[in-house]
Image 1: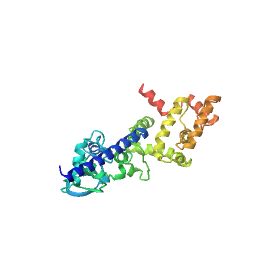
Image 2: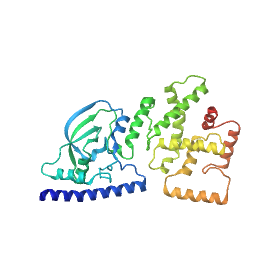
Image 3: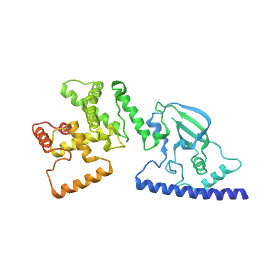
Image 4: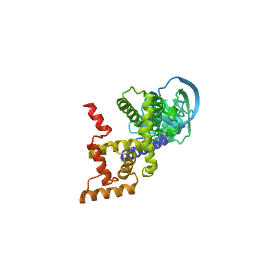
Length: 343
């Protein structure tokens, strides 16, 4: 082995050890914080969700390393920034590093492109080495995947790409952009649009019973939006409820409040809460602001200690009594109706 080769391997070993230590620290922090954004994105999962169609060979390009977010395989062997985990062979990584820094360099990697992001088809080690050497770009054979969803780099922060795809699927199924173009239905977590579709299905079913007719899907979407969704959103805005949940959206709160509304009705045997009452009691007991959370904890402990009327926070005695009276008279919540139907 020449002096140059020996020096390159020694420098590569140092880089590998430093980079792998950083990967271990990153993984430890992710376990502590619950942050799942530290893994490479699975190409197969993205391609399936976007219903990838045609592929176009784009030849050799200089690709920004920061835009490479995932891999076809070995996505568990590297962190999101391609730091090598313990499963990666030091000898192979160091050998690749020596080639990259040697006189001949290394051949281009092979990447898939979706929107403005890339996935490694072949060359995970070379990407890892390039990042460890503080390169900004890498030469790559690029194959572009055709899609109607313009994925961006920022979409791959906290699963935003999943939410973006789910939103497009929701809009396609409901045609809400055309039926109610003023709508602002956005979520901060994945899986929520599917819940809305179930809400509309249930509303369509009970609307058919109420009108003794076959309700079309389009009419169900419109009626659900106008009579179920918007009254709650209007109450959210009138009460400035989003101030208690600074990182959330109207749609986030709608789903939480819908669940809260059913839970209170079931627990206390109450008639359905009005949108205004549902919003006020929810904000009273579920604020995400640290100070309000602390105050709520103190109040709940005091209630357990001194007892009380056992009514929800944010609801007066008169309001509670009226909801109980209406429930006893036969006015029940949607959840109770569904439970009865299933029996």
